[in-house]
Image (cartoon, rainbow, N blue to C red; front, side, top):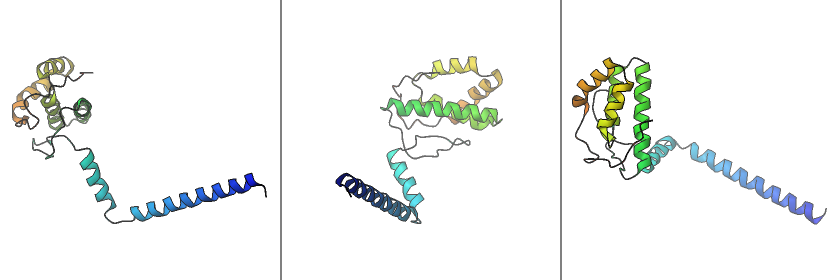
Length: 153
């Protein structure tokens, strides 16, 4: 056996042992009965959910936003708009209105957003939003203004 083939065989064996080691401990870790709970808690700590309202207007999260992080606020804003659109397609108007109200709550320019919604939404839905908006707006746990200018596209 030449030196190169012996070196290749040794490297292949070491790689196979490392791969087997990783698979063994991954399987052992995932077989833990509390694995899903631990993963969920770790994700909640690293990526806390913003303050949201459920369809009854009640708080579903005690966590608050990181308002200085433009990407987090923008992602939340866009997610709330998408969820509202999906709920409107499913004819769940009340739940969709709550998500629109959540988007308005974090928007730095709520008047401009309402003007855009007036053009984009059917009159019936927009009027429902205007009548429900005072009921859905909770005391803003995020501060007075977000200071983040959100894109309306």
